[in-house]
Image (cartoon, rainbow, N blue to C red; front, side, top):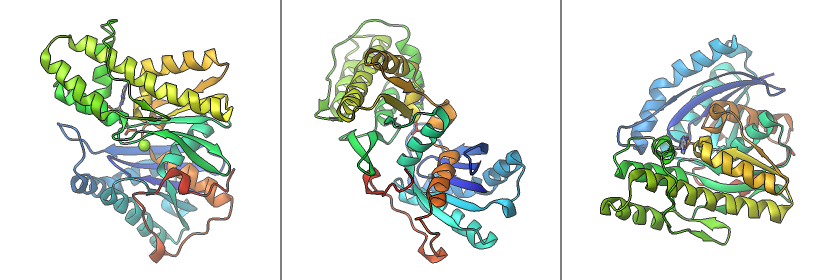
Length: 329
Ligand code: AMP
Ligand code: MG
């Protein structure tokens, strides 16, 4: 059994093809970008519409399959930008109707967690999902993937990108901030915004922009201090979720988790509490079609989810991670 998964929640249009055992046969993607960073929803949707057939072709060629041999179409149904989600759903619907295949819609955040479990062999982890738009700490508890903590305003990646844009560093900002941070060891005290189990970046962003404009500190010192501060915030909440649930595994997902400093800090935290930190390859932490295909397979093979009629295929830009009944575990 082969599943073709379609990711289109934001900037990335991705296709992944997996077999029923979870072997990734191929994945391909194209990301919409702008010079200044950020996403104009209509333009991102146009991008996805333009690239969809070539990306599908690329993935099928890499996998050595044709559409007729695909048994299931999965697409990212939620959460994300309505404009771009709709393109993915429309592509899925068209393929399903044309080739008479079952179709299944999946939750993007849960797909990050499940591809991580598949590829790293983590069994029951706490997921730190730190991407451009999303920042959530998620773990399985009492039948659902619960959000133990999350951002109260923007995603940590968007925070890094906005600050980098203000400093003229270019997009995406996270890797630029990392490079500069390597050249400093001077820790500037910055606002540390952990509220209960949640984090916030809005006030910190304003503060850092003012510090940058005042020219008191070097860019390197600022980048170093920003990373130390926000990564400590993320890991404090992750560690508390691990302590609360008694879980001994931390899993990474989302583009910000590609950051080496965050990875080292997480390894230290896990080592100190006799836990393990699992870090998938970068290509599977950023948005990709393979994770959508894998969650589609899990849901479909565990039977409770029937393929909807083509007319009932929908999207839900606002679905919460804990709204989804997790019957495959
Ligand atoms: P995603 O939304 O999961 O595709 O991730 C994109 C976000 O990850 C952007 O905000 C990037 O700035 C950020 N990012 C990518 N690589 C790194 C890195 N090495 N360090 C920090 N942030 C990163
Ligand atoms: Mg994502």
